[in-house]
Image (tube, rainbow, N blue to C red; front, top):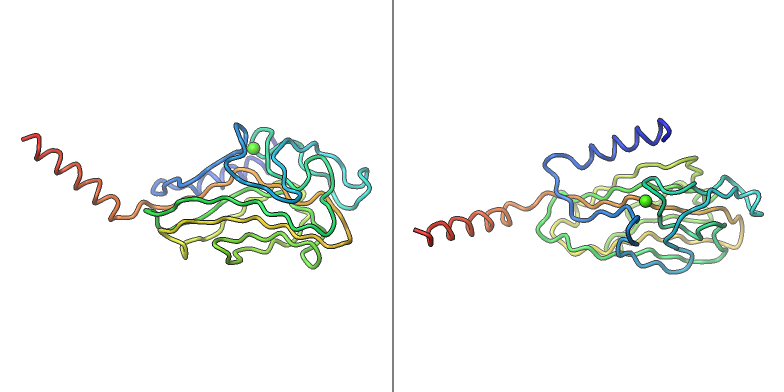
Length: 201
Ligand SMILES: [Ca+2]
């Protein structure tokens, strides 16, 4: 493990916080985490192939995942396709949580965001337009989703490509959604415990 990976791992761990609850997390090792991919998105093990060797531009794709081996990526083991819109989506029930945030690791090489765009949407609203990289390694991303507290979340990683400059694309690992259980939810739990104790008397 490189120093960069260790530093990011510590940063990612700290974002979890003592007071935060985990609404969702997947490292994509045991399964695909419940995400559904269209277009170029694939769940698998990237091979670290070099883009130039594959006939395109830019840097290599990852060698394995940030965690373990598995990731979601735009064409595993090759360059992304031209003129393709690829959606990676997940629905998460975040009712009962506030102060929501989403964190993930990304490896991105799309040749800039003028032509090929790597965007994150939540409930149809654009949250992030990445710079296109190349990131030259895994990069930690943290998004504030507090505008969607107590809601059902429709998460989408959308990669849209033009007819030119096909690179290795976008790879995602270790997606977490975190928040704090709402006081009302805690109060209900407490009340339930109180009622139960009174009934026992
Ligand atoms: Ca992984």
